[in-house]
Length: 118
Image (cartoon, rainbow, N blue to C red; front, side, top):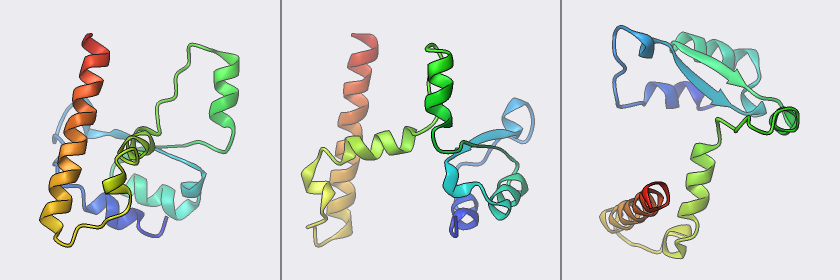
């Protein structure tokens, strides 16, 4: 939560100035449930969706068609952890590590494309 402001300010891609994309949704977990985090999200023009612990599981039990809308980043980190060379950084130079990271991301995207499109 301490770095939420810096993270939201560090977003590189500019959002459109008009239309539906003006107010984007920001999903977070219980760690961001405090008032300073809400204020920071609202200040950066996000609609905060902060789920408490167990709330998502309870909603899935009520409606099995309700799919989770968050944890995309954590799922991607889990997929990246499958590549042991990235899990512990042994590379001396940053360019080498970034190249391996980009290769792993490309492989993940390729595999997801195969899953979606057959």
